[in-house]
Image (cartoon, rainbow, N blue to C red; front, side, top):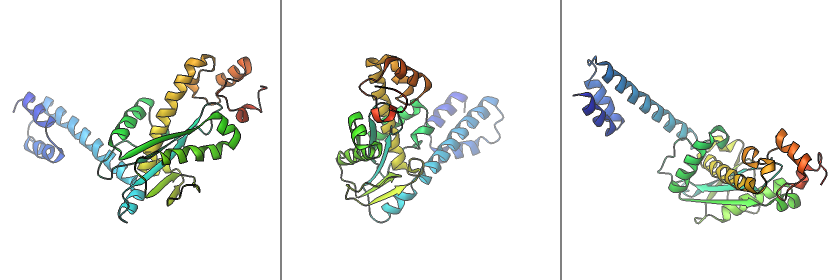
Length: 254
């Protein structure tokens, strides 16, 4: 078998077939063949590790699946801490038969990887929904209650009613669906992790759009968080309509 034929065969093989191909070439000392087999072995090792990592984040989901519960919504938020912009939440019901490898706490992913995974989650999930609470709602209700409101809106926007909810660190008393609150849930539950990714990507896009209206605050870079440059811009230019007045009152005059 020449190298071109081997490449074509490997491209069309699964892991079990790869193992057999490698065993059949155990005595082949061609450097190009050895390098190609090593490349595919690394690929499959990474794939196996990603599957194991994903399965480790299905502990809560599997327990509920085994109880006959199919529609499990993971819920998470992004944007509780910034000085500006709405707080966003997402709810995601994953398909138990489809693995979306790489899903984890959105903060542990690069922006590019988050965007790729967000598109994949939207395409493969049974249902997803996004909710948000405005700056005025944050100032009027406080950030905790506004966050819960965004989560409630995300859940109520699902086109499949969840039978159970996995939620990152909070309880939603206004949602009459059984819930499990999980500390650091975005890294312990695939469903919550998926929600964190969609919420993060959506809010980041929102802040980039806002940046075009108020470029002096550099929202495309800081996403509304209290960076030194952002605070200096507030002191220089004052507040814009999307600043949370209850968040900035300690260091700036309106």
